[in-house]
Length: 370
Ligand SMILES: *[C@@H]1O[C@H](CO)[C@@H](O)[C@H](O)[C@H]1NC(C)=O
Ligand SMILES: *[C@@H]1O[C@H](CO)[C@@H](O)[C@H](O)[C@H]1NC(C)=O
View 1 (tube, rainbow, N blue to C red):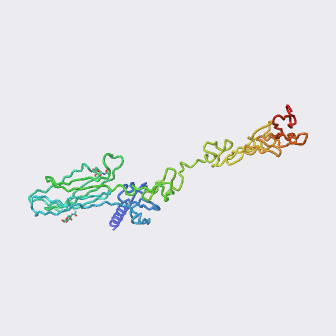
View 2: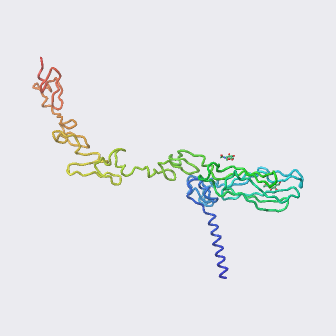
View 3: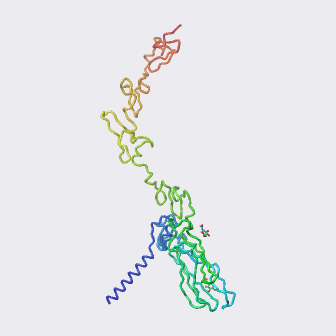
């Protein structure tokens, strides 16, 4: 009883293992080609909102991927020519049926067809030969007898182990079609096979550049966004970290500006401005670009002692003007004895009369040669 139970358990475990093996598909494939090449059980869902694009057929169906959005080529056999004999059986001619086929192979999925060979009477059992020199070595063709005698029937199975990879001889074209002739030894008739590999997704050939689905930052290919270098995310919706300005760059007022204008420290992308030993002096602004001490000096005083330094510019007190606040707006010094500014002849600038020729003197009251 215990032995029976153990056997049953083992059998179940084996069944589960084989089922699990059948259902696995590497989901890290980055595109449709990689997906279908990664295993015969892998299928591709080309809807942009797919949870995962590459999974088993069942996995994609469970995700809710619509059937017509699932790309899962399994290959197939198409009989191109299958003529029956017009001659009576027993004639001297050899008859092969079918005569021409086209086979599409998904690597890992075998395709087969029965080949009927009707031989002329009294011929020994024939051996099949083929010329596979044009086919990639990944393609394997095998025969197994279904019916002995005459006519004899042989099952021809064709399978590709894998897709052609970039490291293989690149002179060979990678998906065919290739022609193979199966010929019974000693005869001239043959069966022609046209073999091609299902290793490329057709959808990979069309790219919708700057697709709105990809936030305008990438191309939509097989329902998947191929983002430009600057963007990442399922819909290229995020800037890639590589190109995000570093925290330090956020502390610059321009691309070539100094971090925090050289007057502070960048902490988490924000400037913390240096303090000055003189408590009256301050660095301010988003990039510490402003100071209240870095202004023009006149008469050994900032802003001539007649204004305040505001972000590098003198803001002059009333009665004073000019870049360094040394220009008086008072007119008393320009007043002539006749109570007219600069004697009515010139302009009062910074408390000094600018007299036109021939007038002169502090208030334009002197006339040269008058
Ligand atoms: C070819 O035709 C014969 C009938 O003439 C049929 O029995 C056979 O199945 C066909 N072979 C294939 C591979 O379709
Ligand atoms: C591959 O080669 C075959 C013949 O060797 C040719 O018919 C076919 O067009 C080629 N395919 C490509 C994609 O070059």
